[in-house]
Image 1 (cartoon, helix red, strand yellow):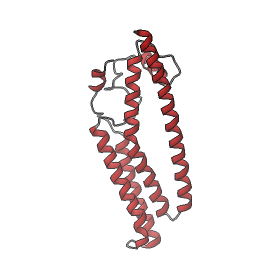
Image 2: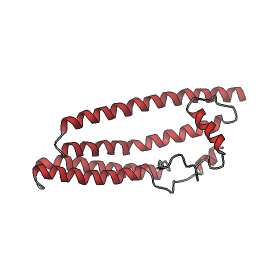
Image 3: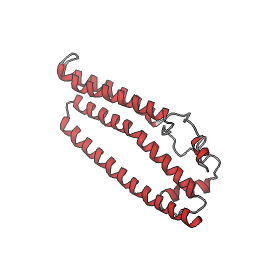
Image 4: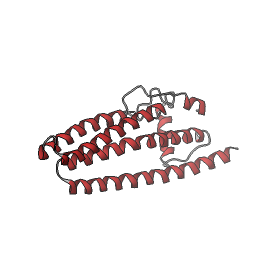
Amino acid sequence: MTVAEHEAVGPSREPSVQLLMVGFSVFGGALAGLAAGQDHGILDVAALGPRAVAVVAVVLALVGWRRARSAHSLTPVSFWDESGGPLEHVDAAGRRSLFRQMAGREAVTATSADTVRLLISRKRRRDSALMPSLLAMLLTLGSLGTGANHPGVTAVALAVLITVILIASRYERRRENRVLRRVDEAVSHRS
């Protein structure tokens, strides 16, 4: 696969994770507003905090979806389906081998080195496009917890979630860098 073939894929035509996060943020924001209004009254100032956080979450989810859509880096809900993707014409065994190479479980071959590099860059672009949606999800969960009058539990849960996300992101980045070094070695042996 060449860079031109990879870039010609274009936008996804199916529902994306970012679009689902917009719906989740709207629904969660509405629930947070109702929960905050139940304890404090609909127009009480104390209920404004969770509602304001929920509004920020919805705006952030919309901005994240819009940016990912304009950059052609929406993450499809069924990410194993490669119809219309850069691996559309690769058979199942070839896709499995490429994914194993991307994960570092198989040696990168000289013939697939460029494809593995393109797939890792595509994955990184999609991962960075998901960050606003993840942040919107965390804000929505925070507004739900504070709106339901459980700020302590919410703070602990959000701290655990953020820690898990940071550790997983760091692990993935290190693994991708290790695979990219293997790609460079395969390309240098090919030359």
